[in-house]
Length: 90
Image 1 (tube, rainbow, N blue to C red):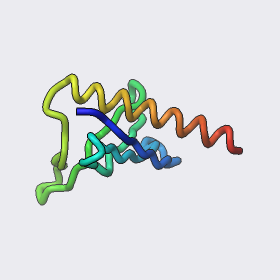
Image 2: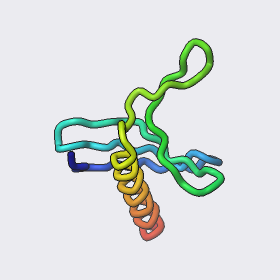
Image 3: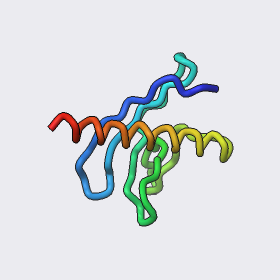
């Protein structure tokens, strides 16, 4: 499976730094991944919904570590490129 497109929308909030939509094989998109500033740096949170008991459940998520790492690495790279692009346009 190949990531064929990543679209990043920046946010200027305390911990939420942006959203990402990721397209796989030019045929399937996962929208609403969050780019979060955590205690140990940036990480990608999968899209989720709030359950009736107040907890959150992922709507879509990778099944194995290799896919999670591929998605996170790719999304964070696209995020950094978008940040640099915006800085260059000021």
